[in-house]
Amino acid sequence: MTMMRDPEETIGNVKGMKIRQIKKTEYSVLPDFLYHAIFVPPGEEPPSRDVLHKPEISVYINNFGQKTDCGVVAELNGKIIGAAWTRIIPAYGHIDEETPELAMSVLPEHRNKGIGTKMLKKLFELLAAKGYKQTSLSVQKSNPAVRLYERMGYETVCENDEDFIMMKDLSKERQSYGMALGLCFGSTIGTAIGVLTNNIGLWLSVGVGSGLALGSAWSVASKKQKK
Image 1 (cartoon, rainbow, N blue to C red):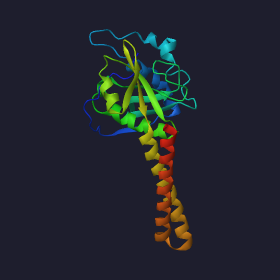
Image 2: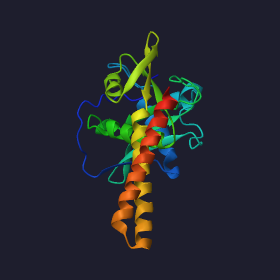
Image 3: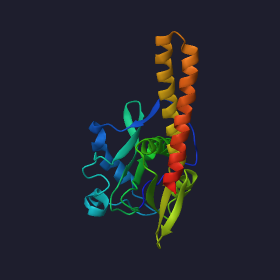
Image 4: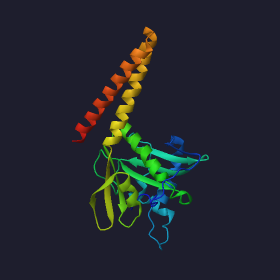
């Protein structure tokens, strides 16, 4: 089985589209997107939706909302047109108990518009914020989506006759998150002290400098954890 069958060769903007974290009230859309994520080779008939009841398939969505689950959706004019989510599960792309596996799809009429790319970028940010070092997936070798995943930083770590097991290193996303977090913290503290001391310019500068130092420390820590 493979997740995502849209190669997403064309990267563009879709007016009015939002990429955001999935809400608890929206978990019910995941079965539809899981079904659309099933790769159907050209010339073959799509499987019955009963396939979602198979344990090796349903594991991607059953009881979604656990502590380690993470997901985003693409919303256009109030309608969810795409979803990407990760879970730590014993599924096709499982690597270990600390690596969340990806599932993703976009409704057929909205493919080839760069939506999958945008969802992945947002999902990577959320995973980095949660402290995950990497994420994995399983994709059939004949699936054009392999190119999308490679473009987004996934690398093949093992394979069998039909599938690639790929992994994305989240070090860069973790470093970016650390710098942003440090900058936000430092500027907030600096501004607060500046207001109290009637010297915003000085303390904002000090706060920003301290924040960047904190972010740099996060980056170094991320690199050490990778090793």
